[in-house]
Length: 374
Picture 1 (cartoon, helix red, strand yellow):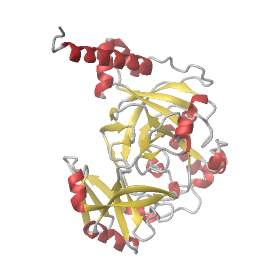
Picture 2 (cartoon, helix red, strand yellow):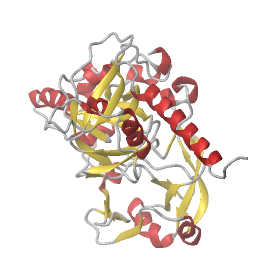
Picture 3 (tube, one colour):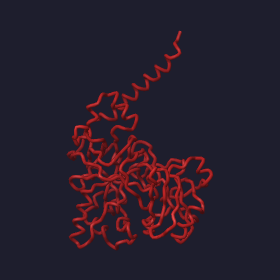
Picture 4 (cartoon, one colour):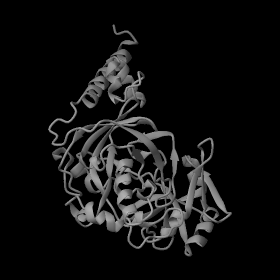
């Protein structure tokens, strides 16, 4: 006769075995198998940046959660034209950078304000379904010609922004319908289906301080002011070693430095396998990113985020002279800065963690290359 506890124990054992096997497969793959570019040394995360509202001003945090959809709260909201239902972007309205966002001390409320204006609105940073049903309406909008859904706020929120934009606009919170990654993140190229919020094409952008320092050296030699990396709106900024070495990344891992002070993020290898699997399940272990494409640039970096003034030439002209490094799709005609990444697992990320390059490639081609072929 079966004991009443036998079946639950069997299921638990099978779960542990399957989870551990998957963990071993995910986390113990050999670095740089088949790569053509030598692996650079690990580099420290020096900034985490979140942009809650698409095309508006973001803020830095010391620690946050990395979801498969990107950093927590990143691009969860956007503004749309209330009549056309099309999304609004800094590409056409540089003044959007004057819209500031901030979290309260508890991290539960998002404040939205306009530089030079006294009015501001405050909304829940993590609205419940009940709150959305009572305070918004379910609606549709369009991003780059594709329809997406969301929760549209009312006049109590939108009025100050309608005045600012000079036309009826609506703030929209991401709806329940999944929005698939695009370009190299599309299922047919990435090899799996993954979603994001209101970012243009991908979940996450990683950039290097070493690369913007190199760009700033060129700008200064032309008599131009140095730029902050905010111009490029990345989510994760690493210190970097050699400028532009990120061009050749294929897979990277984010982990805490060793407790012994080593900068090697593979410290978790010292732990027992069950403990490593438990860390991975809890989201406290290493985080793996697939680096699927270079970030092909428009002229948004020409906009000064402090003033909304758009420079007629820089840094676009300088970048065009030496950063047209990708032959795929629209990237043939644009400079590249930063790398577009797709998280493979979820967990905490914080400033001071290390980014280790596991695999490199010389085959990145924007909108064309399949990830498995890199």
